[in-house]
Amino acid sequence: MTDVPYLPAPEEHIRREKQKARVLRQSQWWKNKCGHGRCHYCGRAVPPRELTMDHVVPVGRGGHTVKGNVVPCCKECNTQKQHLLPLEWDSYLRHLEAESRPAPPLSAGDRSSSDPEAGPPSPSSPQPAGR
Ligand SMILES: [Zn+2]
Image 1 (cartoon, rainbow, N blue to C red):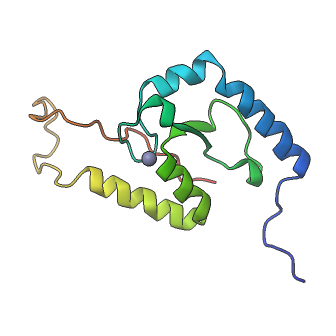
Image 2 (tube, rainbow, N blue to C red):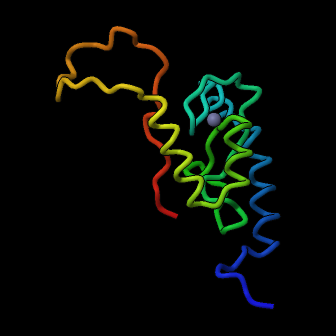
């Protein structure tokens, strides 16, 4: 048997971080975050109840349960993220971004004129592409 190219996080780490996630999920901070009712990744409006806690860097890859590493996301994105490789997930995000901005106005740098539609807010900051 050959080794996998990356070292999976030790089980103890996973258990500890999942426990922390359970606690964080009860926190006011998290409730506030879900209160916005928006998926961090696709930017869709989602009822707060249906938002799930997602680790940007998965716990299984050494990610920690800290405020900077957990985001609310919809079930669909959560499922996608779990099934896709990091690289595929990356292109999924880019695909979403392109979809949410179908036709960027060509007026270069003119930000004073407000958007006539002022519709669904686009995800302001997708996750950093690092790992
Ligand atoms: Zn989503």
